[in-house]
Amino acid sequence: GSKSWLVTSRSSIDQRSKVFTGSKSFGPISGTSVLLFSAAEFEETFGRTYNNSKDFVGVMNGDGASSNCHVDGAQWSSGTGVYATFDRTLSSAWVRVTYVVVLGA
Image 1 (tube, rainbow, N blue to C red):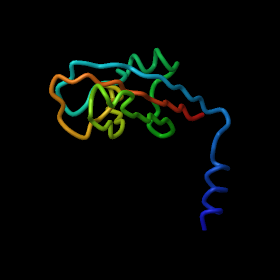
Image 2: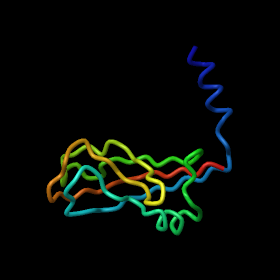
Image 3: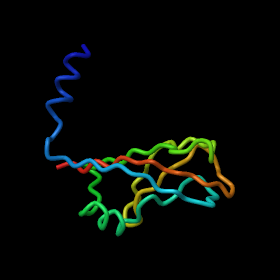
Image 4: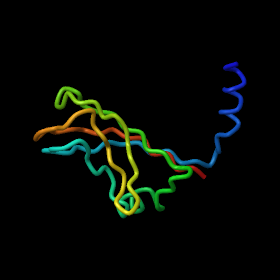
């Protein structure tokens, strides 16, 4: 049941993982996504290149009053970086993307 799932999940958490949080404002944006971190910026900010087998980036709209869109998720694009993706096409909108980055050990 769910207890077994929780035990499995908790035992798989590596205590050496690093967690970073923050937010970035973008605008005006026209499109369905925005480059949250270029590959170079990710490495400079978090101290290593993105590892798609163990790293995670979660995102949300940090100011729904300024932009009524949903920030649906994040996408890694090899060689380019991490994009925050939206639920609709924006036209000259301002968006604050609040993020959590987890670097797996």
